[in-house]
Amino acid sequence: RFLYSLAGWEWIEGCGIYDIDTRADTFMQGSQYGWGYSLPIVRAEAGKALAAHLTEPGWWGFSILDLTTLESAELPIGHDTEEDAVSGQLEANGDLTRLAMVHTDWERDLHQIRVCDLATGQQLFYWEIPGGLVSGQPQIQLVGENTLMVTLRRWDTDTQWIYRMEYGEHM
Image (cartoon, rainbow, N blue to C red):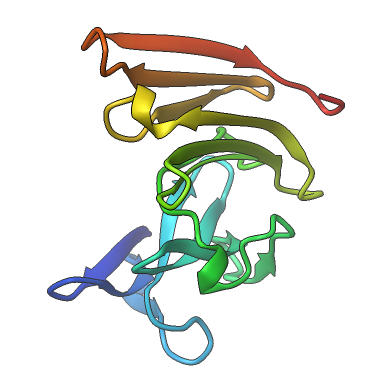
């Protein structure tokens, strides 16, 4: 089996799973999933994918999709509507238990980085970075269950700075 996305000129039309052995094509689009439905993060070794809607403001309506049964479960992480969308990068750990997000609040000129536990929706880490200090959006990477790597390009020195943050259930 393999996953695919079908994109139009400017947006994702939908995505699907194609089974090579049976030649079955399961296309995920329409009223069940909505416009711009995509699988931004797939963890085949865990048998799961992060599914979300992608619209102009960003990613929203997160759920976990079981790649075997195609059953989905909504995630309680607080981005349920297009108005609450995450405008930047999404990153998950290997078994899809943690999700890191970069959101740029353009009105406040601020980059917000959050890490959430996907089972409970609990926020495990939060960091605000003034937009005037960095060039572009910060880049994030989750390592294991409790480490976040953040790469920033500084305006004043034109250098990249790498930050390693450890977080836990009670931080």
